[in-house]
Each structure stands twice: as C-alpha cells, then as structure tokens.
Amino acid sequence: MTVSSPVSGLEPANVWNFFEQLTKIPRPSKHEEKVLQFLKDFANERKLAWQQDAVGNMVIKRTGTGGGEMAPAVVIQGHVDMVTEKNSDIIHDFFNDPLRLQSDGIWLKAQGTTLGADNGIGVATALALLDMPASAKLPPLECLFTVDEETGLTGAFDLDANMLTGQVLLNLDTEDWGEIFIGCAGGGDSMISLPVTYEAPPSSPMQLYELKISGLMGGHSGLNINEDRGNAVRFAARVADTLLEAAPGARLVEISGGDKRNAIPREATAFLLVPKDAEGKASTVTEQYADALEKEYGALETQLSVVLAKSSAPAPEEVFSFDSAAKLLTLLVTLPHGVIKYSHTVPGLVETSTNLASVKPGPADGGARPNKYLIQCSTRSSLGPVLEAVRDSIAKLSRLVGATVERDTAYPGWAPNPGSAVVGLAKQVLEEVTGHTVKVGAIHAGLECGIIGEKVPGIDMVSYGPTIRGAHSPDEKVEIATVKPFWDATLKILGRLADAQ
Image (cartoon, rainbow, N blue to C red; front, side, top):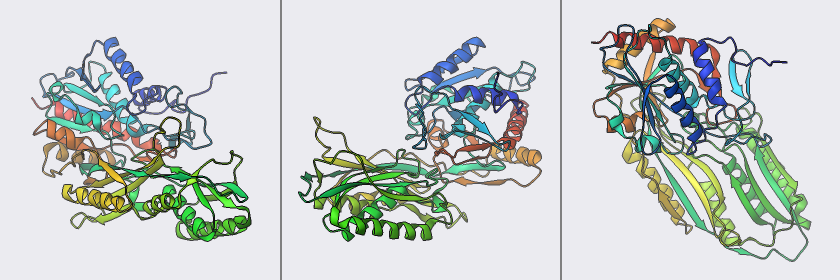
C-alpha cells in the first residue's frame, strides 16, 4: 500500500517537493557532502552553470527569462546545513537516516527530531526558482548555498565572493512570516576548559544514582532566549550542588548536557555516589528542588522532569575530588545565561544575551578519565564592544576557578539600512500579499548577511521567510499556510527586479 506523503497536495508544490527531497538527504553541519552532490546533480541535469569555493559553498546561476534577461543579477541566499537535535528516546542517525515527516494540517514537523526547515525551506525555494519555466519573469539569479552556518557561520566567513556579481541579495533564513529583517546580532563562542582531578570513592557503603533533567523546550539560543526557557545544564548543576551539600559524603561522578552551541540545553544528566545512610536525604532534597523548579518554571516548561533514580551502571572506580566538583558546579551555576540587556533604541529587541550551551568531559588521554571538563558559552550582541565585554566577564569568572578559555573569532552583526531600495520593495510587496502593515526590524540571531555584506561592499540585502517555530529543537515546525504567500512574495519581488534594465 502506498503511504501518502505529508506534503502531498500542498502549495506551492515545487517548493514542498524540493523540501521533501532535502529531508531525505543527511546534512549535518560540517558534513554537507551529500546535499552538495544533490545540488551539483540538480544543476547538471538542468544545464545550469555552477561554481564551488574551497570550503564547499556553491553558487548555481540561471539567466534572466520572461523579459528579465537584461536586468541586474539577484542573489538568493540560504544555508544547506541543519541543526541535528533529537529526543533521547528517538533512534535516529543524522548521518544516514531520512527525516520522518508528520503534519496536523497546520504545522509540518519531524518525528522526534529537528525538521531542518531552518534553512531547508529557503534552499527549497531557491531550487524551485532555478527550476522555473523559461516563460517565468525573472532576473538573472545567483543562488548562493552556504555550508556550516549553524556551527559558527564558517561557510560565510570563508566565502569566495568572486563567485557573485549581484548587488541585491534576498536572504531566505528568517522565521516570522509578515516581518522583514534588515539587521542582526553578531556573536561569538567561549570554550572553557577546567582541569579536574579524581580520587578513589569512599570505602563506606555507597549507591550510584543518576540525576536526569529532561522535558524542557530548549530552542534557538537567539530567537528564544527572551522567553526565559529552562536550561537543563543549569538545572542539573543546581540540583547536584544542593544534593552534595545536603547529603554528607555524597560525591560527583560525572555531569553532561547540551549538544549545540546555538540551542538552549533541553536535557542533562549527572551521576552521583550517595552514602547508603544518606539515600533518603538525597531523594528528599531532589524532590524539594524539583518542586521549586516547578514553581519557578512550570507554567512555561510544562513537561519539565527532574528524576533521581538508582543506576544499574557499574560502581565507579573514581569520583571527582571535592575541589574539582566544587569548581565545576560553581561555574555551571554562576556563568551568565539568558538576556543580559534589551535595546534602548528598538523596543523589545534583545541587544545582548549569552547561552550556557553545554558541559561535557574533555577527550580521554590513553584510556584514563578526562583530566578536564569543557563548558561552551555562546554570546550574541548587536554591539561589538558589548559582545566582547560579556566574553571578557565569562573568561574572568572562569579563571577564578583555574579554568582556561578559548574564544573564537566573533562574526559581525548586520547594521540596518532602513533606506535601502530592496527593503522598500520587499515591504511594499509583502504588504500587498498579506494585506496588512509589515514590521521592519532586526533579529537577535546570527544571519550570514553581516558577513556577506563585508565581503561584497555595497550589496543591498533583505531577509524574510515563512513562519518556523522551535528551531534548533525536536519541536521545530513550519506553518504550512505561510509558505505559499512567502513564495508568492518572492516571485513578485523578483518580477519587479526583472523590470530593472
């Protein structure tokens, strides 16, 4: 029996068809080989010219048609990689398995994993444009497909801008239909390395416990940071720290949580060795803290779960030294997380934030336990000096407990240009399509426009897209009804740009 596709019958059919094809192609950040081959095959089958730079970014070109032959080229831009997050109870190999789609008629999502609508819908739209019939009124198109956007925008950083001639760019990588974005935050990561030591566990009777934080919403560390969603790494550290203080003799064995620099941690786990005579106290303290977290976050985090359970894992041969456990947990409960400052000039816009993204053991040396733990923080700001000031504070706090910090090269923000011609055109068209006033603003997330703008001086850029919610989490979903007007607006914008001779 043939099973109907969740996108069957949806409009525009060409966009949904290409998006469904993309969901069958593994495309984790830094591992985009399969989707890039798909793009090459796509271009070759249609006899479209394409170029690729040293890091993998591709440009596929289409000549103007339908009266747009002599118009200036327009760049259509999106990124081919996706965030690979899944729920802990889902078996899925992001390097080999296709996504499993499901729809309730309003939203399209994947089963237990990220959907990759960020930025798969943008990529699918670019492919649909390249695949339009020769009668379509379009200017020359330069469809730029960047790699590795989600783990530091490295594709954009290393872009060979000589592949582009267009001086107008449509970025299709924002997630609120009916809004236009003309600026974005810059950002940078801090990797904290904390030396740790271990010792033999106590000789008295002990029980190994697993503390698990789960059920949190997680989400995009820029777009959702203003919602005060719970951070599983912070919660695990707070509960573990309280338990160790309340149950004399209890010891920390391991702690880990978070996975992606640009996702708010949804799950975290700690293993603790608890004296047999303190098991009741440990359970009581955990229940009390779970109740406190429920009162603090329960109205928002309705699926929050805090569970302390006996572990069937073998008894550990080593535990953290008291000093190392104290330093690690102190860092995890005191490092900044969340909104740091709102803009004074743009009401409601987050100006600066930071995400306590992950904690994990460092690489093991020769089979021994790791001699360091790694903590990653991802900071964003629309003001460059403020971004570095926050990263300075993270570094100084970390050094107080003997940690070292490595900072990557920050990516630039995109300074708004409200008077740009393409912004005015996009606003006019979106208002025609939606029938209401369109909001023009900036976004507290990293877009590649800031970097591309530095590489192509004078390029006129605008960003818009269909509505996507839950990006960077297994709750990611795209609002089906917004894709058609998004496509219609794109065609209309390009049709008018085709008139420019």
